Length: 173
Image (cartoon, helix red, strand yellow):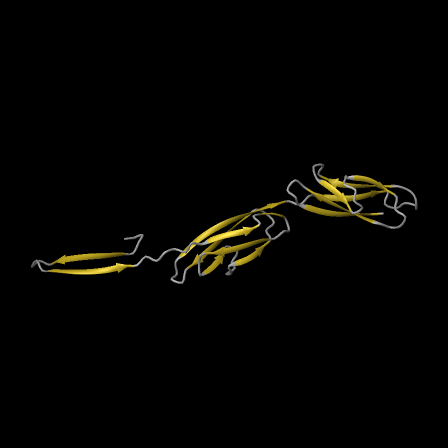
């Protein structure tokens, strides 16, 4: 017997002399916890962090073994997290959340040539996916540029891909 709500069951027995006896038993069905989970954010870039929060129960166990209601996670691939919530009466229920992880842009920066005389020009190049957006530390927002520094200079370039993930690289002249 698996009642879904609390129920009283009655049984009546009759012996060979037609004598009867009645007994009752009450089965109490305790409610399951309304275990819920949220992630903020649900989509991240590789190396970023998401905050997972569980609510609706008295205690929690996560698929990664932690027994807290909130935790920070830094997955490097798409990952589903499951949390099992338990009530004070021992009833359990689970909920899941998927964290989508986007790759960082692949980026390299070069200066050709990297050693110059004062007053001469060198070419800087950000090497990566052509669909990336690039911005250099000197404010230039193209993948290539020519510079003529008067002293040793590091030029940092930041690439942003279509998922808004960023990477940086440095070209030294």
